[in-house]
Image (cartoon, rainbow, N blue to C red):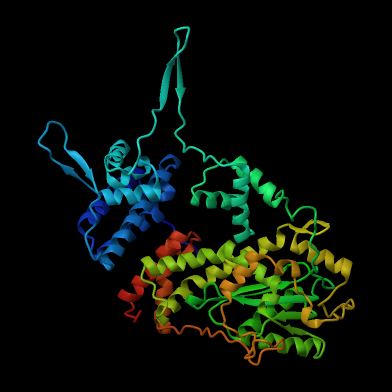
Length: 551
């Protein structure tokens, strides 16, 4: 069904509505703190105005109005948070007026303890002006009166020369450098590097500041060279030799895994990648972690890209169908399905980091904001079902769009020109032989000497960013090591991450009524995250007030 068409509203009417909305928001922020429902309703008005009418606003006014509405929404959300979490004590009074009985304006008094702590943390008076609600010069005067700061030298000094002319010499306002010899500085830098061997020069600078040693950046660099040596990439001209990722060609080995970045909301992203070309052969966001779901994705990928000779995965129970299919179609006893530690499946672990940066992190922040500001309850099965109903298709669209872009983007290769995964997959088939297609005579696959080590990317295996991302997304205690922490054999049990599909709380008639309502909303057709937020707000409100479901 096509998106509904709307009659444009005159620009002057939109301006008046915006002005009136700002007045109402200001009023609510002053007198409605504590009424969460009223604040939520006003927030919906802000989001509706932004979504429905911003396309009719001239470009020269658009940024101002959008920025103003964003500030209104932020202020309303802060007020709603205050409504839900009342402070235990009134705000601290940082300054006040003291009437001395003399002429002129009253004296501004500042809490000495607060001022001392503020200057220690933030520094000069300029950055503290808004905190204490007075001019920086007042803060400076009070700091001198309380003995918190020492008087500084004058900004400049005038000298009368022999010929009668005046020379003005300005003094630096920066802190004076420490008087320290090179040998002493080198000793301190050496002690820092002994404790923290991998830190760089900026971290050394911070450590020196902590020790109250103030020296120039040039002196730090020179000391670093004397103590550590020149900071040349790769530790000088030495090259660290590592085992290189090597497989026979495209479709020789696929890697697959599940990514749990959205598991709090019962969403798991499953994916397959060709090890030789890094072509993403399959990716999908699912509302469960069942083995048949992963098997369906694998079969769909095989239909498009062919059957790989081998597949590498971990010991998760969601992989048993893929393993059974591979051993059925390719045979047992040859390593058709290679099970190993997930950290060894680094080809796809690196891919998950790129997925998180590209779109996974965006959805995680989006869902977190729905929890904080828009009443999403991840412990409610009804809420999770509605979340999936609204956004699972959108996440999959993001995944497919990203996979297309990934497969077309150039990748640097050692000793080769840049090429896209699609390019490497296609020309790899031509240069290294076709694999995975039953209609042609397949090229002979290599028989690895060590099946367990086949397809491990040893270079990326030592990438700290990839390993950190893996640890954050796979926090399963000792599951892959088995019960004996010293054994190198396979674990005694498979790891199992339970993710069950949320059950719909609505009858088929109610689901249809919800869909009919959603089709009337312009935000249903938008990929903008603010519009998707508005979609959740409308859908949840409709289910609560119109369908009477227990959501």
